[in-house]
Every structure is written in structure tokens, then in C-alpha cells.
Image (cartoon, rainbow, N blue to C red; front, top):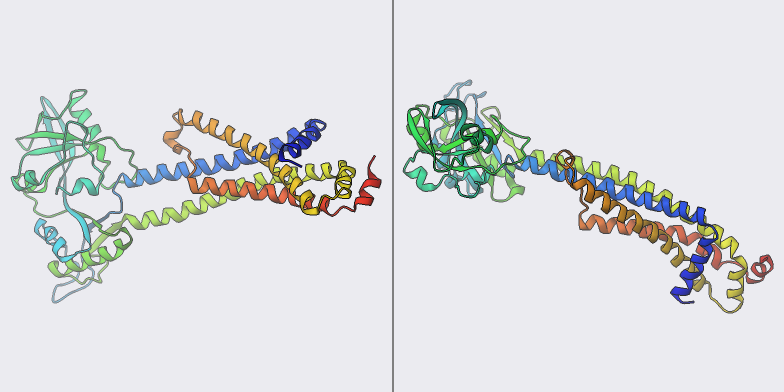
Length: 411
């Protein structure tokens, strides 16, 4: 029997049992819709969360000098570590694993624009700070350059929210503001970003100047923190240990003193969130899979009923020479057609719902739902497996019918 004839037989049978057929197809479609939507929203939420985490910096570590808790080479415990810019600049030669590093001086300072005075969180940083902390300038502006640092230029880079607060709707680039009685040229404004992790405030409300300029304007010579990243993200922990060891040699403290430097390694947080979301995806996938399985049970039940209704027809085919493998193949194809039709409807409905939801503000809170290609293939494989299992038992039962008994049971 050709594929067309086989599906034609199925269509004729389903027309005689419209309600049962519609309920079965609806169950498969609902199971597919649930599975696809749950996983799509799960991965969309993970992507949103990861992007907000990466807004602080992708794979970076931040170290803050603290107090020693161990005595070392004649130095007593309880000594406050004083880290200078030169100590940070010496680290790339001492730690080859470093991809980028920047010192950071921080202060909250009064800034004047015209007659208005604002208190602004301000940082003095090196030129590598922007790529470490994901600070991208808007078109028409730029970030701090090596020349700015070398010449101690009085230039400043603004967060997007701070720029609006200082200058309103006017483009700030090329304008000046007054900081410590000195005019600073605004050279760039940050592209807005969705950020949920920070230290000392969100980047949108901050301002940055060259670290060398900071040293010339302010009297505090000590670095508040150091931001760095390893060349190989998988070896960030080794790089952090090497940075601590190098600073221990310069600042004379025990490298095993874990309290001397407070280090926040964001890669550890990213690894932890990976496993949390893996468990989350698995839980939702299992829940959606069980829903799809219910639809498969409906298909199996319907196929059993069809086998019983067509017992005589099956017996006649076998009496005319049809082999059991041919009978099994026909019924498996019909089961696959049922599951495929229901699953296709569920996928189309899921795609339509996702398209509608992407156009709503809800995506700002839960992310834009999407299904990675590999996972989409896994969902398709699961549905194919459900279709095979749903059709196998009825097909097996049909192929094992005794032709004589089957013909006798025919109406």
C-alpha cells in the first residue's frame, strides 16, 4: 500500500470518530505547546539573567585590599594593605595569565554644570577598564585612551543616566563640567545596559576619568580595588591565585591569608548559575515531557480502537500475502501521522504565542523566549519517540493477528 493510500485509510477512519480524533490531536498539540513554551521561556529567562550578569563584566574578578590576619616576615597581623597604582601596573609582567587589568580609585565628588551642582560617584581607571566592565561609548563619543592617561588629560566619560541628569536632552560630548575647580571635557557617554550586579552603584549613574588624572587632582594615592580577567576564562581561579601571590610579594603579606585581599570572582557565580538553570530547564522539560506523553497515550488508545475496528481488513490483507512487517509499518506510519499533525499544530501555536509575547513589555522581566537549535532537535526527537511508542504496541498487535480468526471476527 502506498503512503497516500495508507494515510487515506486513516483519514476515513478518523472522519467516523471526529470527536475522539479531535480530542487526541488536541492532547498532542497541548502537550507539544506546553513543552515548547516552558523550555522557550526557561532559556529566555536564563539569557536575560546572564546578560544582566555580564553587564558588570564578562568573566572578571574584583579584588579589594583589606587587613592582614596573619603575621608575615616581621610584620604584625591587622596591618591595612595600601595598594598603589604602580603595584597594579607591575602585575601584567608578574602574572602572564592576565588578559587585562585596571586599577580603580573611587570617590563621590561634587560636579558643577552651569549653576547646578551634583554629587557624582567618580572613578579613576586605566584604559583597559572599559572592556573589562562592558562600558561601550555611544556613537559620537569615545572611551579613555592611553594618550589621555599618559598626558593626564582632564577628560571624563559619563554613564547614560548621569549624562541625562547633568545635561538633560543636550548631547554632552564636547561640553565641559567643573570638578575640583578644574574644567573636564566630556568625551563619551555609555550605551545603556541592563545591569543587576554592581559594587558601589550602577554604571549608568557613574563617571570615569584616567587614573593618572585622578592622582593629579586628588590627594589619595591608594587604589580602592583592582579589576582583572584571565586570558583563559576556565583558568580564572589560577589567575586570581597568581595575582594574590604577586601582590603578596610586593606588599609583604602571607599569600595564604585569605582575608588580606577580598576577591569577588564572577566566574564562580556564573558557574553556579549554570547548574541552577540546568536543574531548572530539566525540571520544566520533564514536566512538559509528561504533558506530551499524555497526548501520546491518547494516540496509543485511539490506534488500539482502530485496530479493533479494522480487524477483518487486517486479516484479509494478511490472507492475501501481506507480511507482519508490512502491517506494522502501515500502523506505525499512521501513528506517526497523528502525532506529527498534533505536534505540528502545537509548534505553530507556540511560535505564534512567542511572537506575540515578544512584542509586549513582559520580555523586559522574563526575557525573550527562544529555543536553541540543539534543544529544538531534542524536542523533535522526543516527539518522534512518543509517536513510535504510541504506535508500536497497536502495530505489533495488528501484525500478530491470526488471519483466519481476524476474518471470522469481521462484521
